Image (cartoon, rainbow, N blue to C red; front, side, top):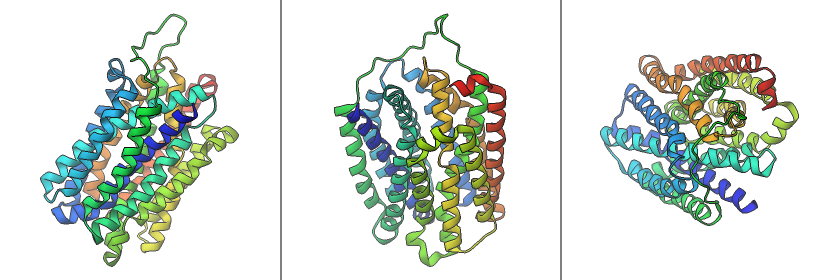
Length: 382
């Protein structure tokens, strides 16, 4: 079981390498291709749509292939797509590679989380936040490497560094992940049906939360590069601070969840995130903005693992299906809001992107409170 635990950690690190390397290079890729903020927002919405479609298909795919099988195929595919994305020099090339990479990330996301949820269940102790901590710390490190290599060397150099992490994740999956039978959810009379009402509320909260995370990831470099163009080589610093603080919080997340409960953790976290986003919207300087990203990272750190772990626990007979349903419901804000953020950036400034995110984080907080109030003993017992 410890080797399986280590394998999951390395897969999450590989996931972070993909996201961090690509995001760290985005300011260079956007500048090199001549992409406008509004076009970038549209690409973000389309990418979210594809990402969610792949995640929503997870429950269906799981009927024919195990998470291990899918992970062994998607990890090398993601590396090839990442390399192509970092080599592109045109708007069309950026958009196409962005969309294909979104498909890879969505597929990897749902199956590594489904396997992580199973491992947490088998270990009989909370480890979900630890996995997400590893992903965020990986994003932090590779974001800075991505921005440095894209400015000082070439964007594709970052793909070589990410390839090392991806290979380690692939090798560990090959050697240490168990080959589970494909799952066809069969609800017996003794089993409760999937609680779609609660999962719908959780999904909407997750949608707003993920929109905020993705905005912090995708727009941070562009904000810092705009504030201080002479520091473009370290424009990944905002995402680095975001990922570092988020990762550190998640390292202690399982203990915090056990000590204080998911509701308190999410309520305090989202309140901190609202304050951090509001600070970014106030247009501070380079270093104050970088520190504000750290506050956002602290605030959002435990929201996603709490929500997705909860979704899996509410439907233990069909975890992948429950997570896929949650991801599908969260699709409406995740698909529409990136386009809106792009329009805001084009019509006003990049700072308005983060002012809007303060509102989204507040909406997520309200939905979390409603979810707990409506679910009552069933949600607390989960």
